[in-house]
Length: 502
Image (tube, rainbow, N blue to C red; front, side, top):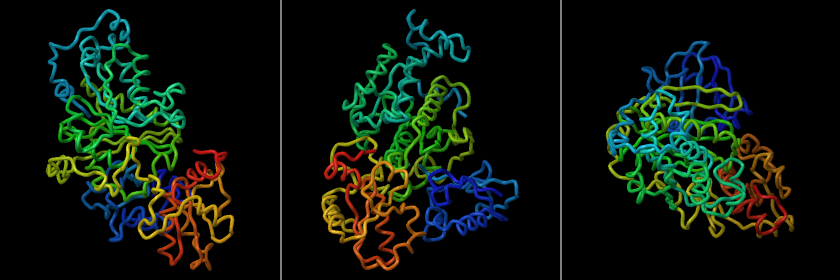
């Protein structure tokens, strides 16, 4: 039988997308998989030997948690197992509830200009005049104006959604333009909500853009959400994703969800009365740094356009009450294979958010995800891979050093320096250190034999992966390991300004 390996885990299978094993049960298959690829084990199983809560396993299209025998479910040679780590059918009644105010009889009228603009919608019997007026009455909140939020907001605006809310307080950077098509060269340095408004108003002068130039937090989420009919989650970090989920459940707002990583994406509709929420799929977040973000692992620039448009489609279907939205289904997108798979999702009756309703108020999501709270204004997407602060002397028992210290030690030849980034990153910029990617470090630990008591300095792009690598070396008996705070980016900023940044 075949096990399908998702992109984030392929670094531990020699970049294999599939692994064939002979196994009688799911448990046996996973055991064979981790025997063949030992580095996978810590990513799939906890110290107690149980599957981690942020890793789901599907037999064909069924979550093994919903099958009677669970991990002991039998397998045949034709079965497929899918590993779905966190990346982090609707009915007209949903649209009627979402648009309860105003009532259908009070829907806004369309001007002659709008009738001409939306004529291709109006001649669709599933939309028609009434449907277009529903779109005009609708209020949709886009959480984030980045890779996913950009196509999402653009197509909702083009479709005639009357009010588009934007939550973000990042500024446009040139590196955003590879995928965030709502921004432009002319708006680099501007607030993203201001840049997005310019594009949306330029596309459709009738749209009402409401800008929330703020970080979404437990203190403001419920107040912001209450004015909208549908919430579209375009974030790339787990703390905001769980915050959006819980706020949607508490306010009764459907959540059009999307996530992306490298060449793969996911989409679903969560937090409806009939369907599951995000916590049903992933009860707990992964440990900080275990799952890389797009900033760390990269993303094909076209992919967020693909997934963002899927989110926009789901939003439109919810507003109009047509078709079968992705409620109770998880859509998996593989852009390299150009394949789309749909897996079944079931509402968990023990889910603390939508099942038992134990969650009655929003919590501290930074603490829940094990992430240090931001200490200053910064991007909405505060990622779990954030750089180690330059002024932090020690973290988890690992001394932190500056790039200036790294340079002096390198120039004096007094330490072993390891670069734990990927080979393709080293091609962009390098200081000439020995390259061992963090995902290969445990299997290549023998290459450092004899240096257990030497000073070893580790760097990556920003200081996060090298911190993980330092902890690995420490666990293997290395006594003098230090992490370079800020990584290669700090080196480019403070040591060699001619070095390219990425």
